[in-house]
Length: 124
Image (cartoon, rainbow, N blue to C red):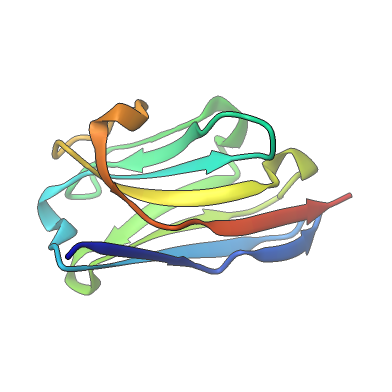
């Protein structure tokens, strides 16, 4: 049984930082792209960042470029999202997901396993 468990969310003031982790079990993520998505209250889920299986290629939603960094440690079966200079608009539930392919995409349809999410709240 594949499980993804996100952690590291919480309440932070605008301008602050958080580091999200996503630990996988039941599957080696080493051959798969990994993605982070988020869903704010009353809105649809949106792409945040993805990373190729080997970490060589990353992609970000425009509004988080330069502030967020996705990384992975395949030996630990874990993917991370470092979030700096947080803004109230970043408030959402953040989900990690395992990609269908070795390269990442921005479409949630290309991800097959999902975590339960972790809440990030940024106060102004």
